[in-house]
Image (cartoon, rainbow, N blue to C red; front, side, top):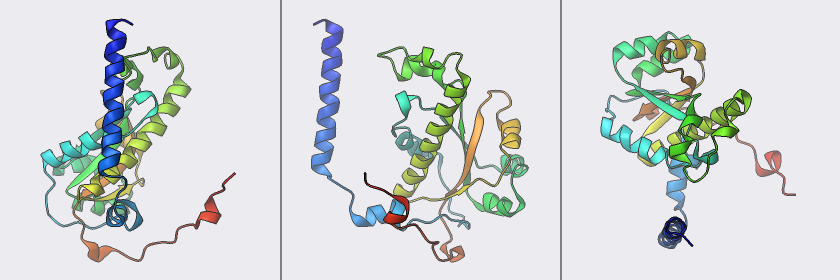
Length: 220
């Protein structure tokens, strides 16, 4: 066995032990934590003026990027819109009912994806050349990017809640206008928007119904 194989074997053993150790320390989240990130979590529409720091946004990204994606493609890109001037640009894309929500939030994230994500696979998936799977195959490359950037957007929302932030995702906007305003040079494509901050809970209404297990699931 060569030096490279030994090195890879050591890395795998270290990774496996880290997962076992984490599971030993924390077999599962407590119920309050699950409530915070999903079960009792809410989408928010009104915001306090408490700021969200650059450091917090960096930490949020560092957590989000650890979520799994197909072949570790990591196609999502994140633009954090905070300044009034850039919110004016973003407002051009929004349906009227969403403009005030966006302006009131301390930060609005544009969750986007990079069509050229697969060209970074030499860094992201170094042990095997997967670029030929995407090169010249635009439909497959698009489907992989859209699916996995959406997954990363969901990780982003859950991570934000875990950090004590509130979120309000929005799809009532023109992707074309966002792409023209923000991505004309780099060619990225917008997926959805997400307001981030500390919510004013007085704007909440009752939680809407959800399906029961038997309405949406089968065990075969």
